[in-house]
Amino acid sequence: MSTFLGMPATPPRSPYGTGNLRGERTFPQAAHDELRNEQLRRNLGRATHTIRAKRIAVTGELPDWEELRDAGAAIKTDTMNRLPELLERLERKVTERGGTVHWARDGVEANEIVTRLVRATGSSDVIKVKSMATQETGLNEHLESAGITPYETDLAELIVQLAHDRPSHILVPAIHRNRDEIRQIFLDHIPGVDPGLDNVPAHLAAAARAYLREKFMTTRVAVSGANFGIAETGTLSVVESEGNGRMCLTLPDTLITVMGIEKVLPRYQDLEVFLQLLPRSSTGERMNPYTSMWTGVTPGDGPQDFHLVLLDNGRTAALADRIGREALDCIRCSACLNVCPVYERAGGHAYGSTYPGPIGAVLTPQLAGMHAAKDDPNSSLPYASSLCGACFDACPVKIDIPSLLVELRHQNTEQAGTTAEKLAMKAAATVMRNPKLYTAVQKAASLSRAVGVGGRDRTISRLPAPLDGWSDSRDTAAPPTRSFRSWLASAEGAATMRAAAEEGARRTADDRTGGERTADNRTADDWTSGDRTADNRTGGERTDAERTDGDRTADDLTEGDHQEGQ
Image 1 (tube, rainbow, N blue to C red):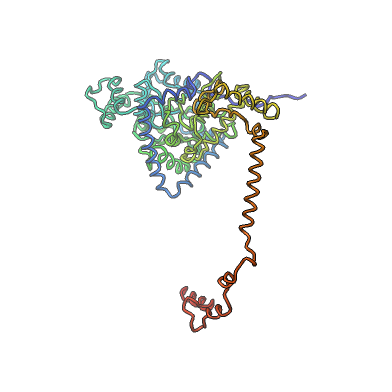
Image 2: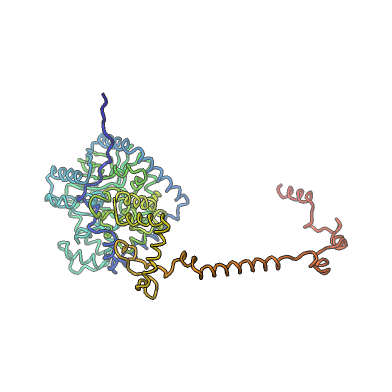
């Protein structure tokens, strides 16, 4: 008797209809509207060019920058190869230091865990550190539905929250807003703000600081993400530039950290590499102004109740992809966004996901899938790239994003089933395998010119569905009135080919005749001018006494070199 345990199933991806890993429209549809927003394009162009220039300057200072990138990539590869082991070790170390670890299979579970923990404290408010993981799961919306008010404390996240907007950049969520827009948002949504507030950055920051300071001092629960989690020690780390993170991580009684499982690192020493790679690649700084690290609970210092929520939400599914798993190496620096020509013009909202830009076009389909529903918007993301390779050059851990995009395009095609494109390719293959059928199709295409297809400029500007996607951005050459094969078989073609052959033969004969000069053709003068007689050679030879220093023998040179060497 044998027992069949079944085949291993593909790990689940993020559940359809939850969180913020899928837009409502495809990328081309959303980008079409975003491209009309001239203010957005100006804001993005100015911001990305500034960050890009700073990154190039500070990375150029390090002679071992490429070696650091290699080290970061190697550490991440090792981490993914040992991820289950490292996560269990992290759980053990956090627990030993007084923390509590929770495992969330998806965003729904993570939101429920955080909501339950907040309710257990009796608080109706939470302060938040900027966190991509909680944006991914839609935690803010879930807390609000449960009667709990979340307050974003990162300045850019606060702007987005107050405006009821969506982040458009991994590092700078409000990159699509300018100072005038931010001023108006503060005037409209911050209670008690000075009506005379202007758009000076220092004054805008002061207004936000006054609003948030009261929240820091009175809110008892904080929710954070984590840039890194160290399996060796159980240490968590958050790097930021404003100090709001430090306030959230130290002042409240309860701290809840939501961390994607791919953020774990094996050793504490690995931070030496990543704390150099991350700030230089993200903000163009040599080091982060605030680097906070904590390990469990320290009696009498900081939060006395610490919870770590380890989030999967499709990451195990990405890990199971032999090629796509490389996307999990991402450290969320946003360097790829700042060099991407597509992102710079379309902006982050066109991607429909928490993760925009080149890495989002790779990571989002890995986490949430591309065919969870008919006409899934995520299936368009791998095509949101020119494959120029700038993202690969900028990535601090050398993620080959262009190759991953090509692989996802392949997977999308394989998973799409029967499509108009596949039917068209099968029809083309059938035609090209049959010479008679191929000739008939050529004749039919040529006849289309007789009914005006192509017009005077001999181009087709609009093709019918399903080929209209091709002609949306390019013209198609109209079929010729006569195919090459039919012309070659005609009397005109045969005469032209014969004339060409005769011309070729004539030129070959002329080249041979003109290039041959035999000994009989050469004159006495030719021989005399080209030859040196014995008298010439004798007259050109000098005696040893006539040699100059430049004519020394090998012995002479050896002796001289030996003296210089001493």
